[in-house]
Image (cartoon, rainbow, N blue to C red):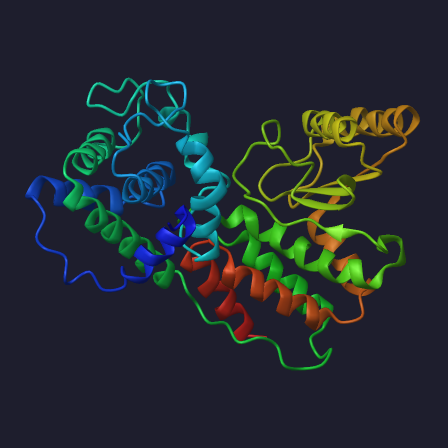
Length: 365
């Protein structure tokens, strides 16, 4: 029997063309239109539905409304999502959550997904649509695969719409560092009409660290950890920072990147908490805006306290200033720019406008 990943991929491959799906009940079609039209806004609902539907295909006897082990005759849907569904969605470059759809509080309430479900699902009509789709899938087996195919078709459409081909730099060290900084400055600071732009500086520093780890001796034998989601708050994030360098499970160096927030004493104290938790040796807080003037004295005092009590170097600096310094340090600024282009093209949290803006800026270099 196929596992959840294999079954999901099988249905995904059948979802490019949904013209052979028989007409669904009108109310079900309307519920699906609502959910599919809000995949990016309600990734939790989308991910949970994909998980429940995939499991229903593999285990028709399971009542998928009872999605927790502690419920009578229930099962651990979150475990299935974390182990199979979300990693597979990421592998297919489809919209996905950072770890699991059940990290959304409104979906993890300990009540079955009946029409009396007490959790409050955000978005006009989304709660009813979600519960009705689950109800159809539970009670009418013939609709399970068609529903999943329609949802996956919408996810495929979103992925394809978000694709932008950007030609990489082919020259050899011909772009002046100041031009790269100007490009990044404009790309970071452009007034986008959608969210996601705050991740751009993190992608730039990730690109830079990919080079630093291969060229700087102090990073010998260390690895750059995968770049995670940029939507979690500093206090709730399970990572040490946006960029993490480590070895054998220990974080050696971390970088927290801020685009639209200045560095204040609270940010420095949060960094201290993470330094203590992860036992880092170096910790950077870098901001496009800079450091809050009123807090400079307190931040400097905290930096000294951290050095004396922990030994970690806390470094507070400007975002572009740091990038300019690193561009002078590495062997090929063009290599950095190509790595940045690649990350922007393939990032699923960014929107099409972030990618087309980079394409426009590159064409003017």
